[in-house]
Length: 217
Image (tube, rainbow, N blue to C red; front, side, top):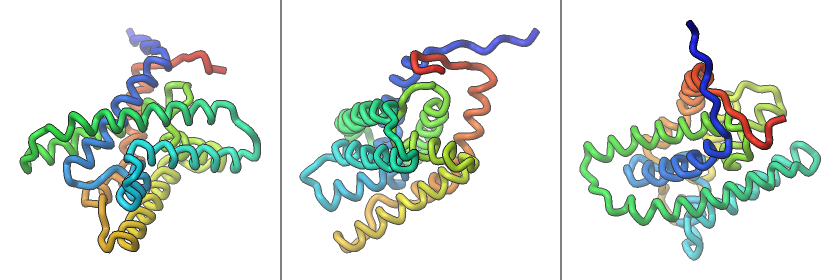
């Protein structure tokens, strides 16, 4: 007998998403393999203009993404503003995670472990974001909404979005700091593979779980 999917509240899933995605971003940076693509642009700004923290630059960047989506939609979308509120919480959690993660030991095997864990955590968080039926973190919302607006496959939007973020980061840090910062082999690997892995994890989630929320149509 086929087991029915488990029903999960999107509100609960969103709380999990904010905590684990911010954890994944900071852990990937701490691994020394480079920061994740979704946070690479705020990271570049935090290095070039360090008066503001990475978390603060993160929700500034996310606000610009929300504005860009409204321009693409050519209308005001209230859910996008709620998404910015979620992005604000995400930025705060990045600053929180930076405090305790900086105390973790850094040996080569552990750094490899940190990268693998951060990669999988971010993929899981984004896959949940695409299904929780709640306003989600703008960096996750942007490729999903562009995919919906254009009709393009999600992975075909996600990968170019990540690559563009990396190019901006590389150019900014090289021009203003004289060296490329924040980008490593892990960053490049994640940018070119994460879209497909997110799709794969999402298919697994769809087999076992369904989501509902107050925003469900």
